[in-house]
Length: 171
Image (cartoon, rainbow, N blue to C red):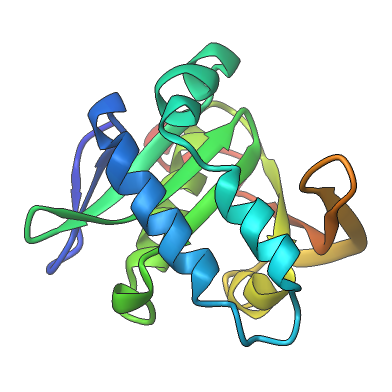
């Protein structure tokens, strides 16, 4: 995939060398939800702990997952991960939220999914991100429970989006 310039930030493929920066973005984004009223401290702690450098460097490549990062001024400010036609993660550093990086990452992930020949994609949205995905054309299918550990889980929303029948590159 080519790097995509979004005026003030660029999107490029995730590299194993980005592991620490991706963890920082993930942990900061989750920590920012401490007072959202939707998640307990235990849920937030386990959710944040689920992203470790070895997830980026070992587990995701072993699963065949692909990732992208948004970068501004030499700093990773967001990332997204997909596996086949499922978006597994999309996070933007709280300092950079609301400026288009999440939207840019999501559109780039959707393009990768379409280029692979998929016409539909799914994701599990946290409750706080549901409106973002709805604004991007996603439909809520059902509420579900996302496991965070042996004795903890959090509510989420399974969402779907139908893509064009043909990838843009085929037109």
